[in-house]
Length: 439
Ligand code: NAD
Image (cartoon, rainbow, N blue to C red):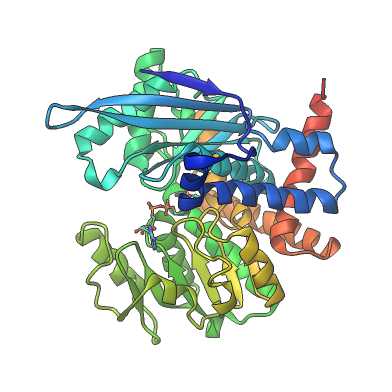
């Protein structure tokens, strides 16, 4: 197994093939967006250049090759990544993504976002992210298991209950987390359930974790609607993405009497002005190979049309770079609540702000997942487990507080909620770096 540890920052310009590839998949854009938002917030609070410089680069970047014997007997070699962006506030925390477009630039951007997200949610964690370049939909369960176990072995010295704690992200879920905790136990010769979160309940998972990110989206939507004076009883919403985050967000918003008029996944988008039966859509996806294709609860539209639907609330909960300078002018929603990581580009931010569209940014809106991951880790470490009601109550309280802090900073610094969220994060992380010392 080849392992390469890098320490170079990703904010350096590249030329030739590598530059065009990055521009094609938009990942350099994601990292640029992180830096641009960091700079905007840093300027507002006169953050010291030293702290800015520290946060512009990841602490550790690990790249591994993962040979896996496929079901046909042939070996295929996958690329695996783990980036630890910061451990200033505590051990690093962040999900593992399985997707074909995973690369170091994407993982770098996602790791940095995790540092800021944990700080916004006031959790004692730094930020990290990992991933494997693969199409999980094309792998058998056996292939996925062998690949996940091999990745865990390659990262055994990176992971640790007090070092770096992975969790699910796009393309992974509790099944993969169970393999990781088991493989890690095989290596260490003892079980350490808190080394990974998002596990199945029977092996140390937390009540409420699976729905937590969608729940955080629901809570922050309601908080934003309150301060913006939007009436939830007459409100409509469109949700892009119907995986873990999108489906739970749609279900929970629907439970709050917000009419969900459009939903989508990578295969289709559905519109119904009278409101989509979300429970029926979830059931359909479960029985239809995990896709919405063929769901007859409305008319088929495109994902591009979903984003510009005439709704009060738009929840992009699929992938990055969906709201760009190309379509931002056409967005009609009054409020965007970012379930996904990085769905809006930095250029689109400006257009939305000029149009008076409010954005609850990803590092606040989708922090519910890592919040309950933290609760899972606390429960694992104390051996005392909480009921779903307790978890949800603690989650809601934490998310409301996080929202209030960001909203307060947005008023104090007369800025968008996005910049205010970065200000909230930078203040906390900056203080931690000062206390730890720069030497
Ligand atoms: P998932 O794999 O469960 O679901 C992703 C969904 O997006 C699927 O419905 C898929 O069909 C859809 N999708 C993919 N490409 C699409 C496209 N081009 N257009 C429309 N839909 C598309 O992933 P998830 O865990 O729900 O994560 C979604 C986003 O939320 C990601 O950005 C992830 O990083 C972020 N996020 C997830 C969590 C979590 O706890 N799972 C926490 C924080 C942030």
